[in-house]
Length: 267
Image 1: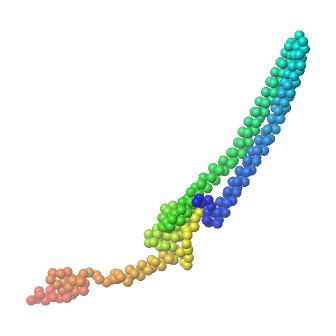
Image 2: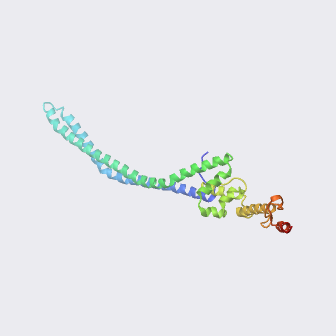
Image 3: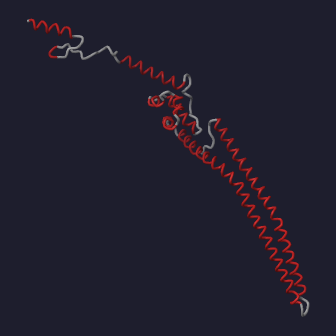
């Protein structure tokens, strides 16, 4: 199912308002185009009158020619001028109809152009964004429904989001993500999903101190573990060798070895 609107209230409100504005804009300019069409079509009234006058003149003259054509001997000769006058009336009717057709074409062109240009201009700004949002939100929703790991969205956030947004989540977001910090991973995923108008499903792990506090606690635990297993810098200076049998003397047995060598030299 295609996702058309954001799950975030503020963005969803902006989208609904933008859609309403586009609809109202389209209706207004369609009405403007129709009004302009009707205004230009008023210029066709003289042409219609000319066409009607020419048609009436043609019909009347041809009717008169038919009547006089029944007069014996001279009927055909008398009819000829009426027929010619009827042809002139037909030409007048044709001129009027041509004028009406030209005005209709002009009215249609102006009405469509005036209405279409602002509508297309707004659609070029609005429609690509709506299509892009719908595709990205639908893909993200499909991944969330399939149970995809939030690490995918967190990784995209590390690669795509501005550094100011990343450092707002954690001073070292990449390190926290590599450490598998669940709060940081969730916050990064939420940042990426918010860009496509989606929410992170499930409870929010970033409460009670935020992702930074959780990450600090985990690092503190690691430091404590290292301190309990490693010796201090002053301890264990070298191998536990007492210097016997050609071995290496260390700081613990160096005085004894020196005294033994002095005794041997005196003997």
